[in-house]
Image (tube, rainbow, N blue to C red; front, side, top):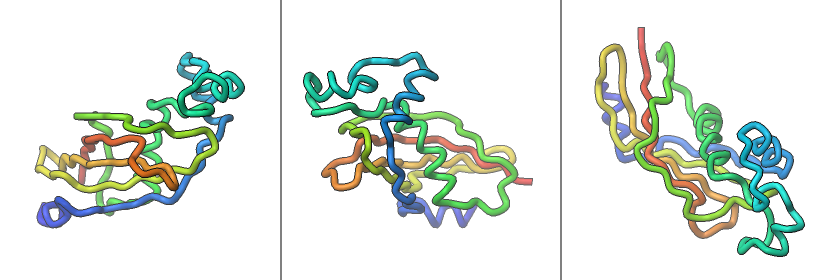
Length: 146
């Protein structure tokens, strides 16, 4: 627990850059049934969207947090890591199709729970070259040991 407490308030991880392709956006649309034109119709999005082209679904970008976190961190000794939920999520800026993103994770809090630790991560997803993040979230993850 002392190791966890020592990390509170500190940036614990930054992921590598990952490209978000139109093919990924289209696949996500098919999986979720969210086929809104702003995501899946590049021509119409170029003509009518305030973003000048297609953008990734907010929930697609949110779903990337698990992957980006796992690739950027290791939690030696934990038997299992459980996504416990989100306290707050906002999508302040778009993720244009074809752009690259990466995530930053700051440990906001850590508390002992039965068999492990509950951590709250301040997560932010950034588009390469963009001024503000495209996603900010308070993400609750439980780590179980033993």
